[in-house]
Length: 259
Image 1 (tube, rainbow, N blue to C red):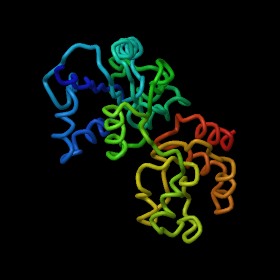
Image 2: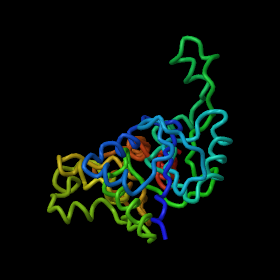
Image 3: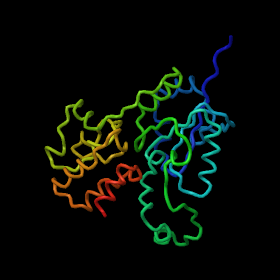
Image 4: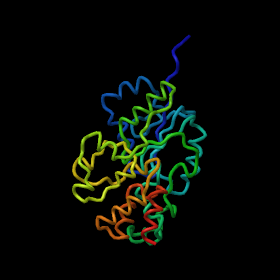
């Protein structure tokens, strides 16, 4: 018997900053091993090779924000055995989902000299709102270790072990002093999924919620604590309207305080 064929990987971009795709390229020491274990069949940011599907796994970055995105996304889904969203834009609509509660026509008119050339949807939506998604890699950008775990699990044909606990757990593991308790700093760590290694609290700053809501986020309890620290209702809403503003748990809490 000949050697098993390498899994075919495709990387796709929708509305995003390319930061999650750059994380793939920033793996550095692991890139040679990845290249040996996988066939990068379609990855325009890294290679001129643009092989047609089908693909074993498609990594999709970015949100659905422009006319034609849904049709292209459905075509990608049809060609992919597994579809994985990478980053906050793909999993929750990204920072661009801030426009979902605004008038897009007014926004484009205030930014572009001639907005008639701008083609955009009224809402920025996550990939899972349009097609089935097999796994999510959260973050802005994604965590390299989680990407490696996903690819390793794909080769080993097992379920990837991705965290579902809160950032607070990582703070405790690192021996970090709680910024809310010690400094009175607003922090979304109690309701945010781990993955970054608690970077912001390590530098005495509150978590901004880059990895989106954890499995069971008690946003109401955190909102009450933020109010106790002195944040008004609008400021509490702003705290939840960040990178993952489109995530339902964060959006609902923000709307509740701005109602």
